[in-house]
Length: 107
Image 1 (cartoon, rainbow, N blue to C red):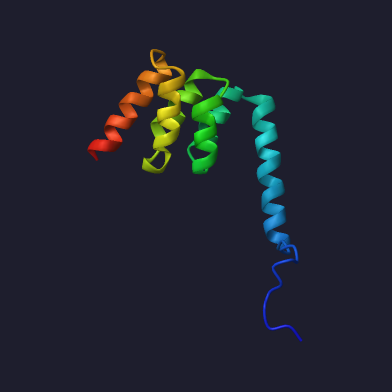
Image 2: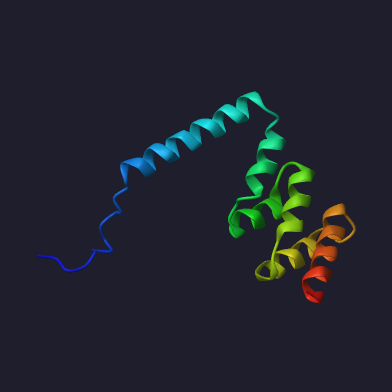
């Protein structure tokens, strides 16, 4: 007789949640095949986690995605903005990082 959840046991996924995730995945794949991938990524960026936004700000293939990601970074991501500044100080990304840092410091 167990009183608590066993942390070593994998979490059981509710069937409804699994179906929802499969539908999301299917829609994403459809959009990537039928739409402009850059626009799909830009749309996904709006709901991305802080970690994924930071990755996009540092490494995204499309310049528009990197610039949008830099603009979405919050105070917890100041170190990412500083890395961009160190790596690319005179680029468009460095200028965007400078502007975002200034905005975060004044707000």
